[in-house]
Amino acid sequence: MAEQLSANQLEHWRTFIEGSWALHTRLEDELRAATGLSMNDYHVLVALTEAPGRRIRMGELANRLVLSPSRITYQITSMVKRGLVRKENCSDDGRGQEAVLTDEGLETLRAAAPAHLATVRASFIDHVDDEELAAIGRIFARVRKA
Image (cartoon, rainbow, N blue to C red; front, side, top):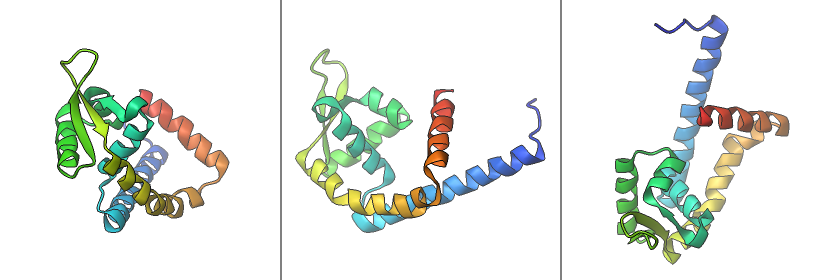
């Protein structure tokens, strides 16, 4: 059985969980209200804009966004129906599939970014200083790697 958390550890763990859920909920609600996009939609669009040729293998996209293969398939299928992305067979082996950002998807992201970034700033960035932000980045890089 796992070792019990100390009172201090438990307090900080609960603060983290409750704070991160509240932040995610606010980001999701504000993004949907302003743009009609979900957080998953937005992050897929961002990942595709950063990928060479605006395309990425489905498995790689799932890993990057920490989604299961079935969840990324569902997500991309939904976005294909809305014209934001398309699916194509991988050019290098033909067995896998890639998600490809459409021009409509790129324009949707460009239109959504200002409102989303305003919410990110007001809900998170403006409440931490540069040193704290750097610490958060280091901590979550370690946590994600683990």
